[in-house]
Image (tube, rainbow, N blue to C red; front, side, top):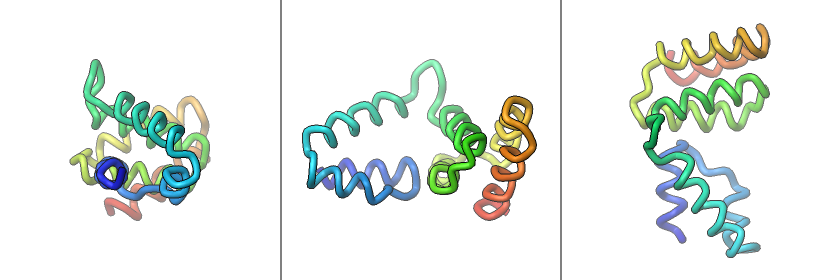
Length: 113
């Protein structure tokens, strides 16, 4: 199970505490969640990088500080470019408004300058 947490950390940048706790408290649920994670983040019709941009835009629209930071860290490790994230944040702006855009831009500047 440690390998799964390490792989998750490589994908998203930082593993939320809840995953480590879930592994101990509910190992069956943990395995199911990790399986879903593998399926969702795998390359398919959309690349991992595109999925990461989508995740950042959604997290910014929800103004979820933890998720934005985790997804930004993961994007950086996947080689997602700043310009790609900015484009995704413009889509969030169009659909979720200025607060989502500002929230995402602040995190982007913090992580990618």
